[in-house]
Length: 543
Image 1 (tube, rainbow, N blue to C red):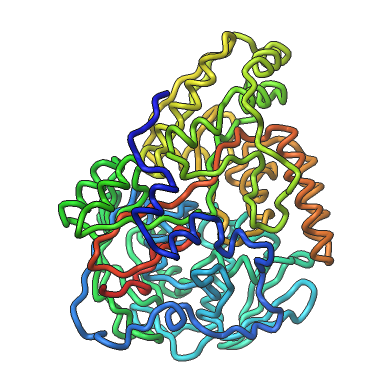
Image 2: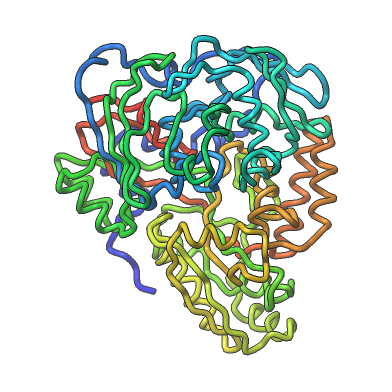
């Protein structure tokens, strides 16, 4: 694999020349610090909204300021509870809001709830903000928030949501009054508040119940600062500022969010002035964008890591030895250097550094092709051929990374591997139906963790029976239950670290790297990227 002609992180800093860029790329962000708090105070004392804390847009709010954003993938639906993609979440959070939210530093802040308190080990009460209206005119009540939670965790409520694992131990919700929401968990849930700050937008119960699932998937009715005015599935979403919004009016008056799977297309659109923001800029294009008077690059380490999901329900990945062999076969350092120009950090466990439960003493698998060959022979699957399915343009250099992984595996004399490009939406549908027999044998995916708690990764990728898990090891379920029942935060973090250690030893996944989010921006737009990859139009200003 040849070196790219791109720009590495150190060179990028010279081009960028800003303190913020230096801090972000040196790993000095909040998610990488030792004192990161993944949960909020039990008494809910932080009541500032992200709109007022991140944006001061009172000046010039009546001016026309339209922007265009180009992602690698478009929203697969307008139903905020029927997807598992950050690309969809980022679009829908323009129109929908959560009970709580996280600010740009990852701190839990109020949104549709103004405060909260734990009233019992298995219940938290939230005070729902008054004077909030949905875009179609209905007034928000605690019943809408309760319905939204149940829509995710209760299969009997309208849909079966693939997001149930994201809400961890939450089992139900009810409205104690028009302004009091009660959220229940089966037992003590240590991240109940953190989960509601990271997931579960609020929908109107009456509006949703009056529509079929298809109608909810193609129209929108939220409480957010923007309302969706047009949706061309797989192509674009158009939004306009909602004049009835309860919070401060954002500077942006309207926007079109579109998608281009090819990174070169996104970069060319930015350079031509056809869009204002593009995602996942290839490192090879950083210098070109930085050298243009009208564009710049901004990058930040994300809360997302990439890995190849190995389907334990199908051969050859029902063998631990074979899974270990695939991890030893891949030279992560070379991929990060040659494919990603240094914009990545190697990983050896499901959880990223900076999250509660990260196992400090677990290193990435070393590159050892001889050991990989030996383990393949030990597994009894010598001569195996398999395919890695991968999206294209959804993650930074995803196809190129998949090709590099397959290339290293193909260097083994007793295994063959090929790469198959997949439409992201169809791939998601295929592996979230819970049927391991029909799911791909192996597929590359990126998993974000806005809650910054290891339990969220386990809920998604390790617990047998979870919507996206392809692991059959019931030991993980027992270890997880023990960790979630632990009331002492330090002891719980160590129990979660034990799960990460086992996930490494079992080679439950083919571990790759932490993704860096590299954005191309038009100079006319003032915006700082977030580690959770959300592109919130409310935080945009005119430069």
